Length: 90
Image 1 (cartoon, rainbow, N blue to C red):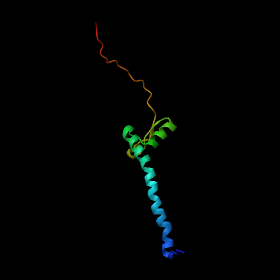
Image 2 (cartoon, helix red, strand yellow; image 1 turned 180 degrees about the horizontal axis):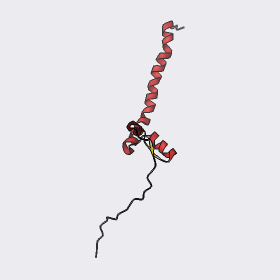
Image 3 (cartoon, one colour; image 1 turned 180 degrees about the vertical axis):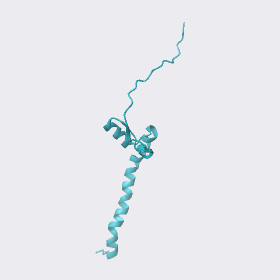
Image 4 (cartoon, rainbow, N blue to C red; image 1 turned 45 degrees about the vertical axis):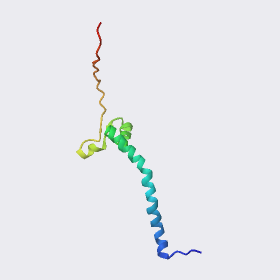
């Protein structure tokens, strides 16, 4: 039978924790990449979008760093549409 030294037995849980911790990082990478992609495209993190959706306001956590309110009411002003297409006249 294989016998382990008592100090090695004490280190096994720590070793297992360190080895399995790397697996969590690998599984987290796609989520981090998606979050960075969303932030790069919209300027808001996925959690900012979730908070905005739930509160029905425009929320951005980075505003807190500038001592501003995190959420602002969504502007409902109408947008003026101007037709700038070129038309050929006969």
